[in-house]
Length: 89
Image 1: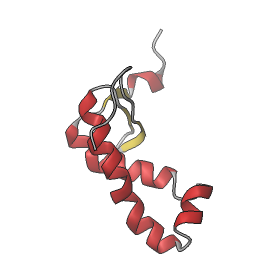
Image 2: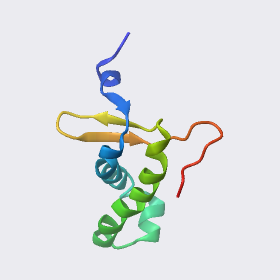
Image 3: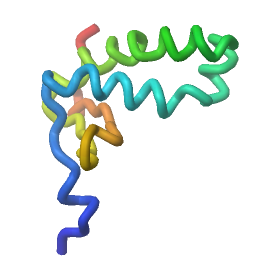
């Protein structure tokens, strides 16, 4: 049985890169490690998208990362590596 949410999950593509980086930056904006590393909220919101772009560029090409399509934008993302592989920095 497919739930409504499961229909919205798909494999991430290179075209999703900016959206994936942005959604991950938003998800980690208030993370304790993020706030410790970059205490200033304005600076953190400026730096985190580029930080997560590095991971997005490394893991999306492996073909197993996923995104959640919302009505108008990607609302979630998970970066994965297949067993025995790592993202290429």
